[in-house]
Structures are given as C-alpha cells and as structure tokens.
Image 1 (cartoon, helix red, strand yellow):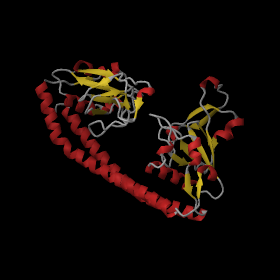
Image 2 (spheres, helix red, strand yellow):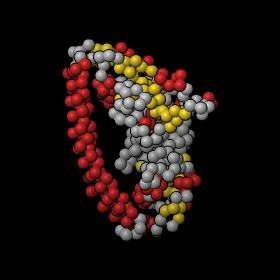
Image 3 (tube, helix red, strand yellow):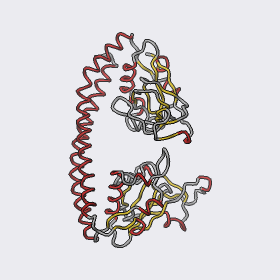
Image 4 (spheres, helix red, strand yellow):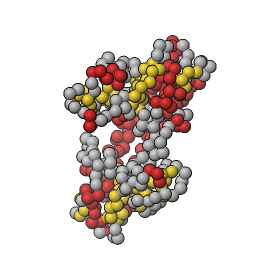
Length: 378
C-alpha cells in the first residue's frame, strides 16, 4: 500500500475572478465542480476564462472536492479548474486508468455511505488517501480485465438513463400540451395573479438568539416538494414573522441555484423563508398548483432563461418574476388541468421507481466488480 500523493501529483483548483468569465468560448474552458461530469469524461464547458489560475491537462483525472465529495472524471482537453475540483496526474510508472478505477472503487470510503464524511476535502487529504499500487504490468492487466467486464454494466446504466429521460419527456410534453390548450385564455403577468415578496435576509451580525425561528433555504425547495429534514433557524421577531413566512397554498420559488425551482407549501403551519426564496401568494381566481406548473414549464422548456441575471451564477429576480406571463382560464379549468397532470406524473413516478431499482442493482454490481479488482480477486 502507498498513498495517492506518492503515485500522483495533486493540483488543487483555484477560481479566477468573475470578471474573467465568459460564455463565448474565449480563453480556456473553466470547470468549477462536477456539473459537466459525464459517465467517464468531462463534458463540454459552458464557461470559459481569459485568466487561468490553476490548469489541468488533457488526460488528467479530476475529482469533485466539495459536496458531493469524491466523484471523478477524466479531462479530454486542458482546462482551468476552480475550487470545486482537484486534478490528479499520475507519475511515471502509474497507469492513469488504474488510478481512475481505484478512486471509483473508493467512492464510499471518500464520501461515506450515509452522506459525505467531508463537506469538502483538501489537497493534503487527497494526497493521504491510501491506494494499492502493484507493478505497472499488473496495473495494466487489471485495467484490461475491468474494461472487458464493465461495458455490459455501463450499457445497462445507459439504457436506464435513456428510459428515465423519456419518462421526463412525457411529463414535460404533457405540461406543454396543457398550456398550449389554454393559449386562447387571457394572458396575465405573475404580478397580476399573485402577490410576490422575498424572505428574510440572514444577518448573523444582528442575531440576538431571542427569537430562533425555523426557516426554509434554497436547498429545502425541490421541484414540487420540500425537503425539511435539514431546516435551520435564525432570529425573526414576531413583528416581521408574517411578512417573511409562507402559509398553505403559497408557491415558494428559488431565486438562485436552480432559478425558478418551486413547490407549493401544503402544510397548515406557516414557515419562514430566507431572502434567497420568493413567495408567490395567488390572488382569487388563481390556483396555486397551476401557477407552479406554469413556472416549471417555462423553466424546463427554457423560455424563461432570457430573464435570468448573472454571468456564472444565475438568478431570477423579483422584478423578472413579476413580468412573466401565463394563460389564465377559469379556475375550474385550471384545477381540471392540474388533476390531469397529477395522473400523468403518478404514472411517471411508478415507472421511475422501477428504473431507480434497476439502476441501484447495476451500480451495486459495478462497485462489486471494482472492489474485487482492488482486492486482487480479478
């Protein structure tokens, strides 16, 4: 056994200042995290930089070093890497693919089976990772064996991914049909059909600890649902609580992160929201679910992209949200459309559950093969 740092050079990423970024292909491709990771190779960049702070070479392994910690990919060309990545460059006598597969086999050891052991991992921790390094000939033999066994599993995973994508397309097509069918209805802006406001700004300097109140963050809002397993608290005085809280029927919208991601708050209890979230409170004649579905449709179809602000981190401001428009048929028709879409989604969810189970089986098989390889059992 040895350490990864003995077998490879590790280059920690460093982000250039935002003024050097562009989306026009000028300069060096810039990767900040694992967003562009593919099955094996890093995909096409969406951001470039005219100033390179830390360069990774074509063929380098890159590891995600911020949650999620541990996933790896291989670069097809040189690139500038930001703080969310580290490059791993094998030294002489070390087979790159042997290291790549071994890091994949170590994924649970690095990231943990119940969530990340590290919220992030630094260069020294990466260099200290223990690895098995047999002679080069044995490394190459194991890689050849893996590349004979893994393609069938990878093909199965690809088929599952295709099935899931088709499933998502069915839902999106149903959304499109719904709003096209209502195209002749009066068009109104979001500002006309709902009251819009932002939540409370988190300011630790002003925190007194006298009014600890649970609140929703961007991460708590998923498409159509809320994840309240990790709700934090901040000081919110009784006098301001109603102004920054949502109640049953309100639509909660992400301002950044994945701009426009939204869900309808269905609980009887009210809940405070952070300033990174918009509250849309439908006015009479506007169904909450219909409004949320329209926003989902516009975001996922890409028609709302032109309203986003920001170069690398996109935002959907209150001003832009106010002017977005939707067809507004009678309330009864809105609710009928929502019920139909729910039936479509229920069917899609059932198929997704089957696909997810198959994917978990294939992933377990892949990990089993990798584990056997690095126990010396192949």
